[in-house]
Image (cartoon, rainbow, N blue to C red):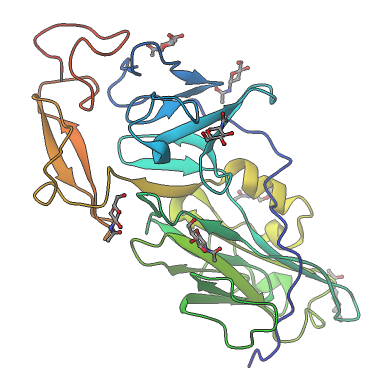
Length: 312
Ligand SMILES: *[C@@H]1O[C@H](CO)[C@@H](O)[C@H](O)[C@H]1NC(C)=O
Ligand SMILES: *[C@@H]1O[C@H](CO)[C@@H](O)[C@H](O)[C@H]1NC(C)=O
Ligand SMILES: *[C@@H]1O[C@H](CO)[C@@H](O)[C@H](O)[C@H]1NC(C)=O
Ligand SMILES: *[C@@H]1O[C@H](CO)[C@@H](O)[C@H](O)[C@H]1NC(C)=O
Ligand SMILES: *[C@@H]1O[C@H](CO)[C@@H](O)[C@H](O)[C@H]1NC(C)=O
Ligand SMILES: *[C@@H]1O[C@H](CO)[C@@H](O)[C@H](O)[C@H]1NC(C)=O
Ligand SMILES: *[C@@H]1O[C@H](CO)[C@@H](O)[C@H](O)[C@H]1NC(C)=O
C-alpha cells in the first residue's frame, strides 16, 4: 500500500524553541544536590543522582550529567546524549523536549518538506516510557516506528515496532478529542525502547485533501498531554506548538541490574530499592513511608537538607 519512501535530511526540529517547566523534585521542598554542586539550571531543579556539569562529579555517572547551557536565557538543560533537552525530572521520569517527523506536500503531490524524528538513548539507563503513544496527525499519513534509521537506499525498513495511520476525506468528519484513525491516531509503543525513528508515508500524497491538509505529523506523546483539535490539521504552527507544549516522557533508573542483581545499591538507610519496570533493568530508591528527602544521598550530604529523624 505504501511502497515508496523518500528520504530527506535529518533535521532536528527542536532547535528554535524555548520552553522551561518549573519542577519540584522528590518531596516538596527537597532540593538536594551533592555538596558544592549547583542545583538549578534555569528553572529546572537538578537533584542527585542527576548533577549539573558534564565532566564534574556532581552526578552519579556520566549518563546523569546535565549539561546546563548558559548561552540560552534562561539556561537550557541537556542530557549528555543526543542533545535531548530536559524540561523536568521527577522520581522516575524525565520530560524532554519533543521532536517530530513531518511531511508536507504541494498541490501537485510532490513532497516539499520532510524530516524524520530520531532520538537515541542507547548506552544510557534511559528509555522511552510506554506512557508515550505513537501519535499521527494528518489526513493521508501513516507512521512507522523503528529502532533504527537504516540507510538511504534501504527499501526494507528495519525492525518495525509499531505503526499508525490517520486518514480523512473532509474536515467535517473530524472531531475534537477523537484520536482513533480519522485525522489523528495513537498506537502503543513497547517498554524499554531506547532508540526511536519515525518513518512517514502517504497513500495519495495529500492530493485529495490538499486544500485543507497539506502536511502530516508524527511524534511520541503521553496520551493525556495531547488532545486532538480539528484545527490542528491545517495549523501552520503545529510543529512549534507541539515542541513547546507536548513533552516526550523518558523512564530513568540506576544501572541495568535489578535490586537483587546488583551488589552496589546506593539507596540510603531510610529508603527502599525498587526495580525499574522498563524491561531494560535498573533500580531506583524510594523514601520509606514517613521519611522525606533524597534517598540517593546520605543525610547530611546534601545542601538544604534538614537533619532530623525523618531524613531519608
Ligand atoms: C522560568 O524562570 C523565569 C525567570 O528566571 C520566569 O520568568 C519564568 O516564568 C519561569 N518559567 C516557568 C515555566 O516557571
Ligand atoms: C534549591 O537550591 C537553590 C540553590 O541553592 C535555591 O536557590 C532554591 O531556592 C532551592 N529550592 C528549594 C525548593 O529549596
Ligand atoms: C569533558 O572531558 C572530555 C575528555 O576528558 C573532553 O573531551 C570534553 O571536552 C570535556 N567536556 C567539557 C564540557 O568540559
Ligand atoms: C545509537 O547510539 C548508540 C550508542 O551511542 C550507537 O552505538 C548506535 O549506533 C546509535 N544508533 C543509531 C541508529 O545511530
Ligand atoms: C476543498 O476542495 C473540495 C473540492 O475538491 C471542495 O468541495 C471543498 O469545499 C474545499 N474545501 C476547502 C476548505 O476549501
Ligand atoms: C481548538 O483550536 C481552536 C483554534 O486554535 C481554539 O479556538 C479552540 O478553543 C480549540 N478547541 C478545543 C476543544 O481545544
Ligand atoms: C550493563 O551496564 C554495564 C556497565 O555500564 C555494561 O558494561 C553492560 O554491558 C550492561 N549490560 C547490559 C546487558 O546492557
